Image (cartoon, rainbow over all chains, first blue to last red; front, side, top):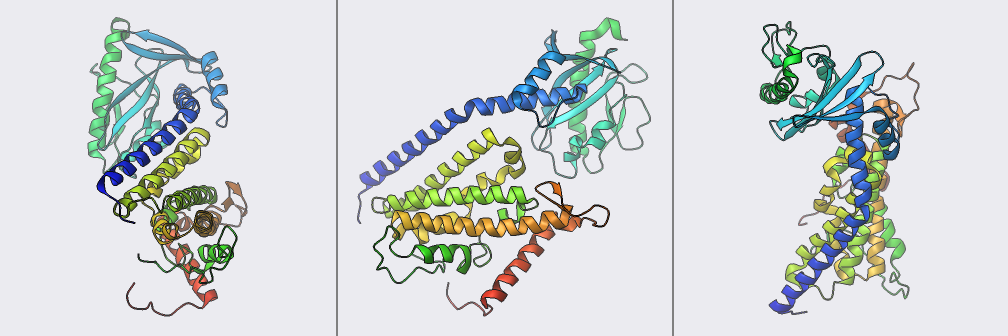
Amino acid sequence: MKKGSLYTILYAAVLGITCAVALTAVDRFTETRKVANVQAEEVQDILTVLGVPFDAQASSSDLLTVYESMVDEEEINGLTFFVSRHPEAGKLLATRFSGPGLLAPIEGLICLEEDMRTIYAISFYKQEETPGLGGQISSADFQDQFRGKMIVGPLGYPGIHLVNDGADQVNEIDAITGATMTSDKVEDMLSEIIERIIARSGADGA
Amino acid sequence: MAHSGPVVCAVCGGSGPCDGKGKETLRAGVWVTNPVSVQVLGICSALAVTNKLENALVMGAALTFVCVGTNLFVSLLRNVTPRRIRMIAEVAIIATFVIIFDQVLRAYYLEMSKQLGPYVGLIITNCIIMGRAEAFALSNRPVVSMLDGLANGLGYAVVLGIIGFVRELMGTGALFGHQILGAEWYTPNQLMILAPGAFIALGFLIALHNAITGVNKPEGKGN
């Protein structure tokens, strides 16, 4: 069937609008569930880094209940801290950090003990670094290295360093081989958040 | 229009909604011209998501849903679609169905959505969908086109299911995450979980299909 240009344009417009309307409808229909999923994920990340036990299969509303009963939020100098009381480690404070990675933005949470200097746990919950190399930053092996380390060096300089020849200082971490660029970025974003934390806890810390 | 080898029933005397070729269409999609094991289409996703049976089945369901929906709409619009923009129109329809499935998966089965990663979205570029729209839906009535979409979707899902079954069972000793082969006597073969395992499993499956159907001659000239 021969059809003119005007018809073609009209056809494309009508088809395009129909598809757009259908997609908008689906988006609206699924929106509440998607928002709840995102929330549940955030809550899960925070609970994990604070060491609060929860059922991994729990529904998003159950997770929110656990979160609300166990975690307080404190806003200090523009940094939001998620505060929880751990049965063994005592008061724990976690805050978010983020920065550019090698391939995509990296986001994570750093959890400190009450002295605001000792790391209780760290989590890089969002990253798209090279799988097997930089991507290893979200592996348990790498993240567990941070436990018990300090955010301040022996001489009092703030910052965590990712080194490649044995991490023997209190603020050194054994970096991932083959992921120098990612390590540099991680070091930068940690330095930034650590400086802000130290500025906020300033006098009482050092 | 290039028919990429599907067997379309020559006897069109049927008066039913499927024009008398329903059974043949189903048989062609699932077995005779199976999109994966015979036409070797869509194997990127078939290899990527089959390290677990559950992932493979959800991916099969996604492709079936998209293929049925696309074939229905392409067929319904086949007489009003201007020929020169038909492929863009097909892509728009395919993309709509893919995004619908992706959104629903994200809302109701987030864990699976994460495991399948980009592969649900990549169904838009899957040759099976576009191939069936071009080769079948453009020249057939809606009901039989839907059947063709269903058959090809099932053909894809069955192959993925078999590969997923073999890979998960051999690679982890489990099915649907439940341990089947005893850990005390079965050592999981990690190769099956990795990419080479997918190629090996698919290769054996195609060989088996060829052995059963007896198709083992070199392809004819032309397309």
